[in-house]
Image (cartoon, rainbow, N blue to C red; front, side, top):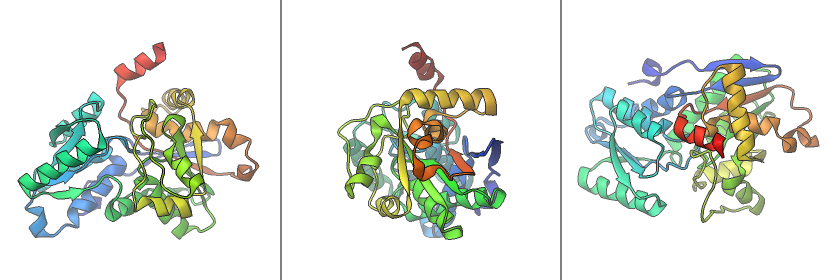
Length: 305
């Protein structure tokens, strides 16, 4: 199976000098998932697949849903390890696309232990959501498509968490245009990537607190060197600014974007970006809106607080 057979053309929207590439639902992730499944050998394809989904990563459960669909189309099972506090809308997407949900506790250790147990019981192949070279490579198609449609872009902004998305984006974008800037956006309540870049080593947080439930993972050993060397800067934003960016996406772009996906727009609108002299010559900005899984119950509750 090739990615082109079941992937989608990403939607490119323009607002003033900001070009926003929308990758909602299965769009971006389907490319990664189909490529990852399609490149495995026939011997491995006879096995079930288990993506160890770090729910606190930049794309929430988009990758899990896409992998579920990719496996379903190949006629093989997909076991998705999900912590018990995952948003219902994301779990529903996994089930909708044929994935088998395996529950774990919320800690990273529980997720890893649960995945190891399923691997032992099924002989499955582990697919990591961001710390995997093929997943990172698949994410790079975002930059390829974006720059094909809008070659004038001089700056790309994308969310960061585990680092798979931003790593693929940075590697591809800077291969095509070494002078392009790649900036990451991160919530203040889960700013381990910004701290890591400042410290020059991976920093992990004991806990996180942000509405952006897809941006709570820590950098991996594969993604950290890319973030360290190719991501020009990380912009930290508050949850209130993320919510405002979501509202603008709904009202102006008419696009449903989850908090984790809207953070790039929040970063561009932030005082730290607009008042930073280093970014004053950013004339054509590409913003990646990376997810459309919105748990409306949680969203309404956050508005009432």
